[in-house]
Each structure stands twice: as C-alpha cells, then as structure tokens.
Amino acid sequence: MTEKTILTGVKPTGAPHIGNYIGAIRPALKLAAAHAKSYLFIADYHALNAVRDPKMLRDDSYQVAACWLALGLDPAKTVFYRQSDVPEIFELATLLAAVTPKGLMDRSHAYKAAMDKNREDGRDDPDHGVNMGLYTYPILMAADILMAQADTVSVGKDQVQH
Image 1 (cartoon, one colour):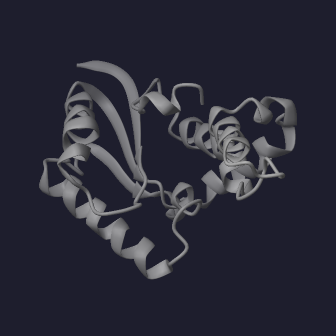
Image 2 (image 1 turned 180 degrees about the vertical axis):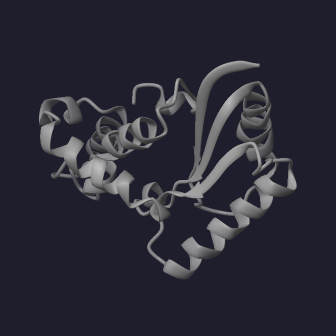
C-alpha cells in the first residue's frame, strides 16, 4: 500500500449508470484500496455549471453518494464529503482566482472548446453561453486538489490539462 494521497471528484449531474461504474467508480475504488489516504467528494460546486435546479442537484448528490457506498466505498478508509460542505475550498478558489493570469484561463481546453463550438454554430459572440463557472473550472479544481494535498488525482481524459 502506497503512502500517497489520492483524490477523486464526482459531479452529480444525473443518475449513476453502468458506464460510470466501468469508467470511474470501479477504477477509483481500486485506487483507493491501494493507497493509505484517499478522498472522494461530490463536486456539487462544479455541477452548478450545468444544473440549475436545486432539488435536482440535491437528489443527484444523494444518488451519487448512495451508489458509491453501495458499490464498496469504505467511509472508514476514504474521506467522503460534499464539496460545498467544506467552505475552505471555495475560499481557496477565490484566492487562487485573484492571482491566476487571465491568459492562462483563456487556454483552458473547456473554454476553448466552448468558443470553438460557438464559432462552428455561426454565433457572432464566441463567448455565448460561457459562464464564469466554466471559465474558472480549472481554478476550482486546483483548490480541490490543494485542499486534499493529493499526490494522485483520478480524472477523465478531459481533465488532464487542469
């Protein structure tokens, strides 16, 4: 068992399904079992970029939590929390935003992909529909990682840049 700390975040943006199990849950549980310290959080702040209904966000958060626990997450071994229950994450994200260069954020793949999509759709405004949550997503992700002092962050291919 390695002494390194791992971190995994799960956005509650819908009911968990078999694809989540195969692509994220099973690998994350295996990774947690191999490490002395692991953190898993429900990324409800991150979900705000897509979910506007508070009841839906709450229900999806409960479904994600129930799913992970039912599939073997051991809360005695893994720190399991909802992102919004740790105010220091938001505070750190705010501090990081104050010192992060705008040019760095302009190069974020999610932001660039949204702009490219707007151009492909023929929109005059390449920033159409881009909210600050999407734009600053990498900053919030950095705050998540720094708060856990994680050595390993289990993410999908679309998150590697962050």
